[in-house]
Image (tube, rainbow, N blue to C red):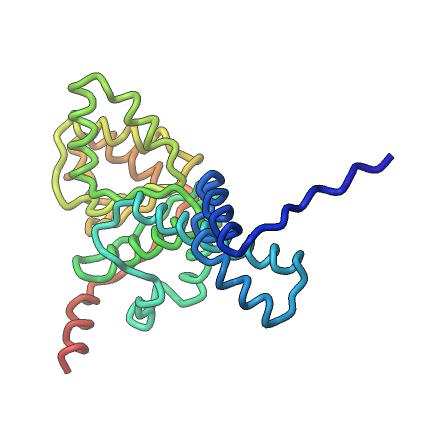
Length: 261
């Protein structure tokens, strides 16, 4: 025996609008709440069936929810400024052809847990690429966090002093991508270097780290002080890694000059 058809209650336009508003609040559907009437009018003009109208309304809600999710992921990443890959001029960087950048933008290397090292002098576009790739990853739904090396070490040190280190390391371990900027800019004391090493080890071959550094690998001993620790860090951040040399010519200076000309 087939189930009875659902009952439909006749109601005025005002009552229907009130019912939609109340239901959308209960079901957390803000986009439908604000656009249902406008979409209904458009559906009437296009002579859509009730089913087609329902599909349109649900699609609008889903699209808006996805947009909000992407924006939330980007906000949670805590990027210091907005930088997008499409604004980066790859013609000034022979070691980064457009095809390579397009591949990196897909984020498949993140899914594979591979590291990325952006290596070059100050002003050569490392941070732009780091933030741009991180933003692309966040907009694809991945959990991303940007932080400078010095800030991360300070955060780890404070956590260790308050017996919160395991919790903090666990939080960083759950990220899909850790964007670590300014690696090698300042020397780390022994304790800070060891704490940073714990983060790197926790993510080894499992979750990606993208780092930007102005120091060649041979000089990382000056940052980590202990040569063995420096060698271990280099080994973990370069194994199966994408290494991009951004060169020595200042991308920042060139861009500024072009904008002024």
